[in-house]
Length: 166
Image (cartoon, rainbow, N blue to C red; front, side, top):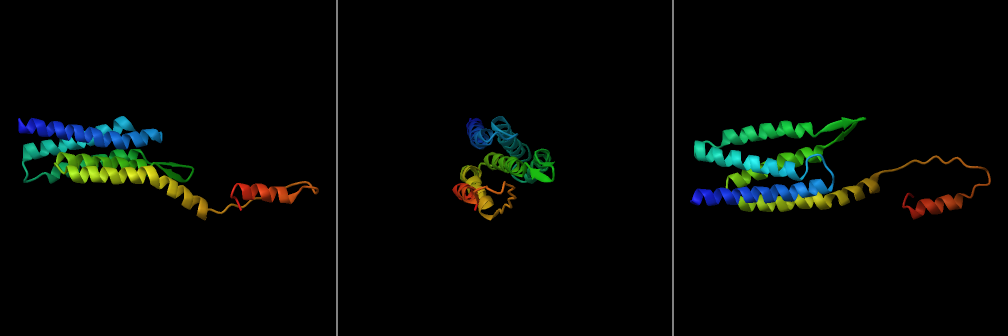
C-alpha cells in the first residue's frame, strides 16, 4: 500500500512540476510547452522510480545516465540556426532541466525538486526582462538619415530622445 501511495505522490508531483514549467513555456509560445514538459518530468520520474524498484538502490545510475543521454537528443532537436542566429537554447536547457526534476521526484527528493522548480520559474519568468534591459543598454545603433535641405533636425532629435534611442 505504501508503494502505491508513494507512486501517486510522485506522479502528481511530476505533473505539477512539469505543468508549472510547461505553462511558462506555453505562455511564451515556445515549441516545447505544457504537455511536453509534463511528459518529460513524468517519464523521467517513472524511469527513475522503476529503476529503483527493479535494480534496487545499489545501481540506479545506469537508468539516470540513459535519461540524460535521451533527453540530450530531444533538447538538441529544439536548437535551430537561422541566418547565423542560434535559437532554442533556453528551450533545450529547459527540457534537460525538466528531466532532471523528474529524476529528483522519482528518487524521492521532493524538496530539491520543488525548490529547483521555483528557481527555474524565476529564471524563465523574470530574467527575460533583465536580459532585454541589458540588450537595450549595451546595444548601439547607427542611423543614416537622408532628408531635404529644409528638414528640421531638431524634430528628429526630439523623436529619437523620446524613444530613448539617443
